[in-house]
Length: 169
Image (cartoon, rainbow, N blue to C red; front, side, top):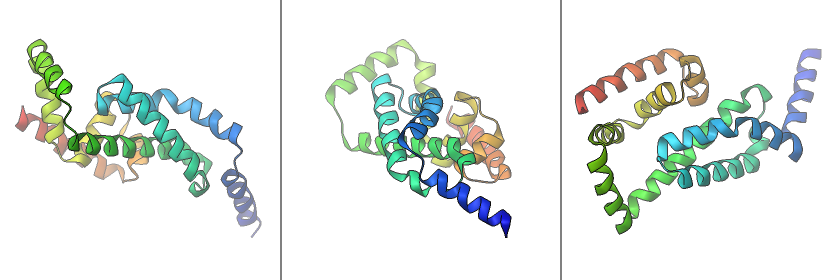
């Protein structure tokens, strides 16, 4: 009974985290958030915008986070969700400047473009696991925390994701 009371007090205190404490914790994760956003969106401006959006969403939803220990995976998951929202939004908009820019990039590096196209064709769950593993150097344990899945599932997704990449390349 005493253990439950202490846990409840700790959880209540975290749920009422003041602004300064919250942003101190967020500041520590800022580089990771940017790295993840950049690996998904491939432009600095888009990555910075997503980090800002993810920070805002985290602040608004901070009371839903019940355990301070899962702050980092929670913020990374919010960042990934913001990236996916931005990618979906970009699919609906086709700026002509971007088409010209992509044509110029294609001439520069065919291998990189081929890899990016193959990554876009992958199933999203596999793409998430591959990006976090090979672009962010996360362990399968860390990826499992961020994606809120068992480690065995993450290992399967990595294996299947790499298989899809081989097929597409």
